[in-house]
Image (cartoon, rainbow, N blue to C red):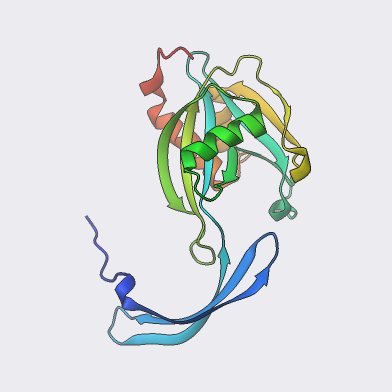
Length: 204
């Protein structure tokens, strides 16, 4: 198995300042780090989009072979050729002192009206480490999705979210045809394709 040649001890942070603070925060960091060929690079300046830990969860009904996908407007997808309304997972930013599992339960209720859900860990990963420190905890949420469709969201956060409940095979087709085009949704559905049989016979 591959092992890292360097660790955090091989990075020297020379300075850090916040260059923007709004709904999100942007920091500029000056640093240097070791090179694979020997010596050091830098000093260099890098901008970092700073976020708290986040989580995303795929609602899955194994008894009925159904999944829940949200549809909502995303500012980052304004250039999408089809629509800036994306099909995606229940997701949210972890509040201070809140575990990703606790966030998952809170967001499942706020964004999808789901309260009786068993949380199954999938993975944790860096979302886009070239420019942000965002770490995402990915889950599958086992639940009963019969009759669960509807429009949800927190009004004072300007959320307008539609929950679609679709057949598992249809969700897989959406990935294959490019209709699910964000990383967390693709990863979760591909994980479910590989691991879904583990939950066969579970009645939520």
